[in-house]
Length: 119
Image 1: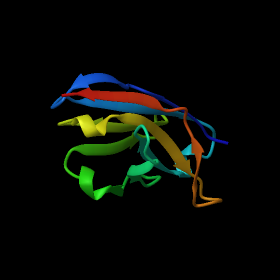
Image 2: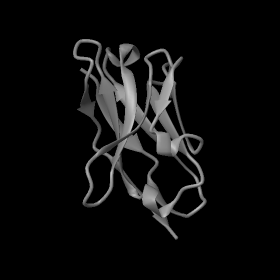
Image 3: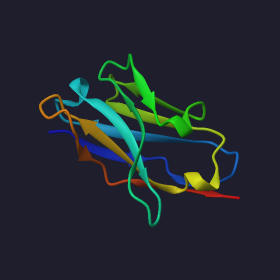
Image 4: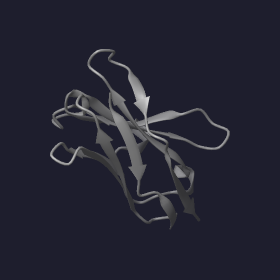
């Protein structure tokens, strides 16, 4: 079973950058696609980005392409989300998730990390 712990959230001014990390434990991490999602106050959780188990393929929400970059270091069991040119509307709790090969669903979640972008 994979366990996920996010870190790197915080407060930043618009135009700034943050890098989120997701540390994974468990033997299925290296074979799991990984994703980032976010949930803003009063809104539903939305997809941000995902990366294949090998790191060879990455996909993004259309509205975030060019500003966010997902990557992974399987030697460190860590997934990253580099966020640049942040906007106030990026304010949300960001969650890391694993999509296990057995289920093909993002059904393992971290506890989330808060990102706040001020004008």
